[in-house]
Amino acid sequence: MIKNNVNSTKKLPPLYWLLTVVMMIIFIVGGILFNQHQKQQTELQLAQLALEQSKLQNQSSSKQAASEPAESGFTGIESMAEKPETKSSNSQAEDEAVAGAIAAVDQAKAQDTSIGHLSSEVDAEYHEGKTLSANASRYGLKPIKSASADLKATIPTIDQMLVSHLMNVWGRSGPDQVAKRVEGWSQQGNTMTYRAAWDSDRYQCTWYVVSWDKNSNQVLKEGYQPCFGH
Image (cartoon, rainbow, N blue to C red; front, side):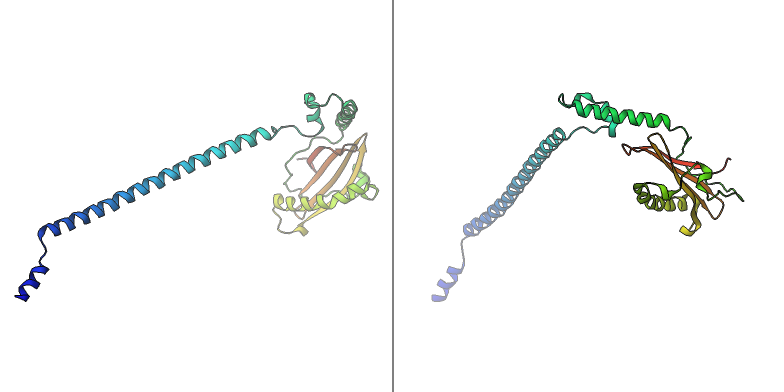
């Protein structure tokens, strides 16, 4: 009798199992729906954050563009002369100084006729058996020892640039294969000119020429000339 009572307590009605299964299904479906809702909320928040960042970047770019001055294609004294609207009405003395500097540059350019045509290209041809004299006066140049201290201080920088460039153009493998043959300076009016002839161990040769206004230190011409006619 007691055994039968125990067995009867272990047997649960079918309704209980049905309700259990239904609750489990509801729990699983609810979990899935909750996860989808959370995912949608997260994606929505990320989209809103990206939109806010985009707006902030656009505002920052607009402010930066408005605060930065427009770039000009002109530099130096000549650009100052071409934009008179930017000058102060109370700067007459400054205007006169600028006008004087421009006139000096124009005068120097007009006087700078003895240099001739300069090229950005280096003569790479071989001139076998031809070399220049080491006497600067033969080319109308004064010796460097009589040049200004500024020019003397600048020449080492020019030499370093030319050695590297000429080795590349002339196809030489070492700095000992190019050398400065002669150098000197000259003056015509306000125009100062420095000239240096360089050659290689394969009879390649070129003049490097640079001229500038001694008052403004503005470079007027710079380039190369062949040592010998073609």
